[in-house]
Amino acid sequence: MISLYGIACNLSLICENLEYQLTLFIILFSTMDFSLQISEVMTPQVITIKESDTVYKAKDIFTEYPFHHIPVVNDLGKLTGIVSMLDLPSAVKNGLSDVASVMTPEPTVLASDDSIGLAADIFLANSFHAIPIMENGHLIGILTTHDLLRHVFKDQF
Image (cartoon, rainbow, N blue to C red; front, top):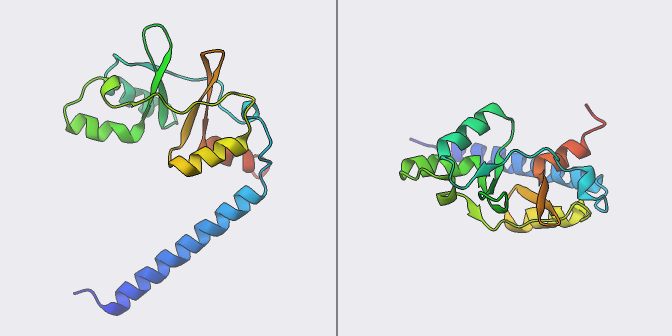
């Protein structure tokens, strides 16, 4: 049987954790120069996957590399979507086999000369964690929330 004391203790820990996360968020974003261009923070080497590739190929890429999002391209190399590591379990469970059936189509994109402040606003407003970076119709990079954190802490480690 769960006691009221136990529930109160758990709620207290949750509130403390939320307070800690909020404090960390305020510190992080109060030290960031939001006018910086995305090109200074983004990951320029992008691994892509084709719409026709299997979700198992996507899983293999996620296993091999330390990232959580893969831009999806068609046979002509045009960006058509983005797939997240979190998309895969439900795909396998529901018997979906190709990346096109689980990707997020027509993802929000930005240009390399856009500001990281704009990107941060988009991340916060949409609850996603990766934005493909395009120049003249070509995929040239990806910006993730991890890239923003790495930039903020670059001098710390």
